[in-house]
View 1 (cartoon, rainbow, N blue to C red):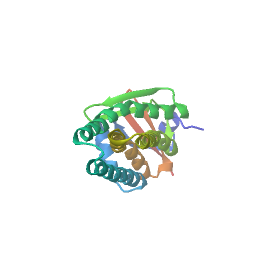
View 2 (view 1 turned 135 degrees about the vertical axis):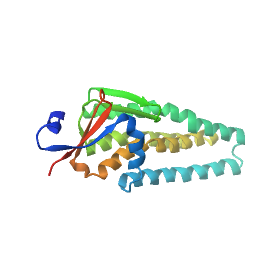
View 3 (view 1 turned 45 degrees about the horizontal axis):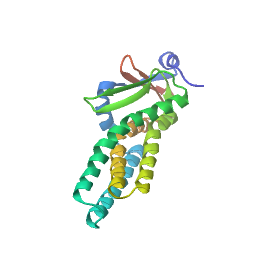
Length: 209
């Protein structure tokens, strides 16, 4: 049975562990992504693989006569600017879809342009560690798989632009991996969290021993 906010905030079963204001998300993300755990290891390892693959494909394009500088530059603009911009709303919609699957009703979209952060949350919807994994990772794996598929079915510079977008999107998922890092650093099975959109804060509660 799903825990509710009343169970978290009253009684002796849970205690407030951390409060995260939306205006402080960037600091939270960069603090958590520096920690060494499975989530951060996966984030850096996969994006390193994407980067190596990207550099190798750039070498093949430019030094084996497959394309010229103009088309190569166009592929960089498309892959690092245009496509990532188009992927942002898709990424957030996939998060919302994951929330819907879990039963959330009050789904809210938002952004903090000063932090260059876009987010979707379910107002006052309590989730635990395994639900968080599903919500946080679904866009990363769905869009990474889709971009790799496009890379393999297209040719030359257009194909390379999808590879650029793959790396760009992978790095843009830093916030999703950072929240998993936070859970992993704090006995994840004991943590529950929910957002209060009106207060612009996320609350994390830990189960008492």
